Length: 285
Image 1: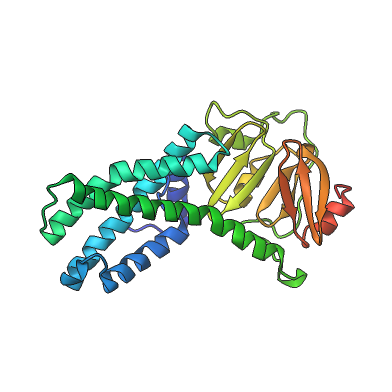
Image 2: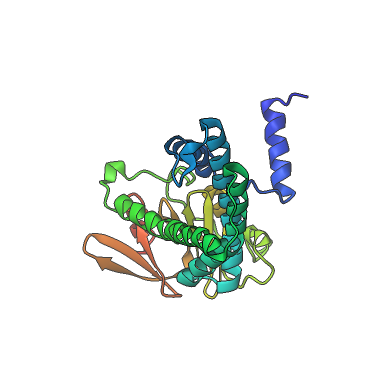
C-alpha cells in the first residue's frame, strides 16, 4: 500500500497524537549511521580483526542500542534527580548506563569476537569504558549547546536570524479572551504532577525545555508548536531559542553589549539583537 504526501502527513500526525514518539531526533538519525560507519572503518578495541561487514554490524548495534538506552535513561535520571539538577542527572545517567549497558556490550562482544569473558576483572574493564564514554557524552551534551548559544549571541545583526523552528518575527500573544481556558494547551503534554505556571520555553535541537518556578520538563516537539500551544498566555520571543511569558519578566540586566531579561524565578534569558527593538518598543527593556 502506498501513501500520498497528504495521507502520509495525516498518518504521522495521528501516530504522534496517539503517543508514539520517534526515539531519535533528526540530528541523531543522521549522525548515528555516520558514527557507526566511522567506528567500523577504524576498527578500535581489537575489532579490526573482523571483516568490515561484521565490524559494521557490531558497531551499528553498539551505537544504536546505546543511544536508545541513553535516551530512556536520560528521562529516568530526570525523574530521579529532579528538575534543574543537571550534575545529579548526569551522574544517575552514567550509573544506569554502566549498570545496564555493560552486560549488553559484553554479550555483543562475545557473540561477534568469539571471546569469553569469564572473570569479574574482565567485566570491570568493559564497565570502565562504558562509564567514561557515558560521562563524556553527558558532559558534551551540556557544554556544547551553551557554547553554540554563546557563538550565536556574538553574531552580527545581519547574521542573527531566527531559529528554524521559531516564528519569522517577534511575536506577542494577543490579550486573553475570558472565554478561553486559563491554562495553556501545552500543559496537556506535561506530567500530571507538573507544577506551573510556565515561565519560559527554551529549544535545544528538537527538544523544548518547559520551565516553571519549581519544575522543569523536556518535550520532543517543534519550538513554534510549543509557543502556539502557550495560548492564551501572553509572551514574547527574546532570542531565536527562547520564549518568555510576559508576566514572568521582572527586569533586565546588562553585561557589556549583552542584554538579559531577569525572570521572577531568578533565571536570566538572553535577548538577541533581532528581538531587542521589539522588546524595547513593548516597554520590556
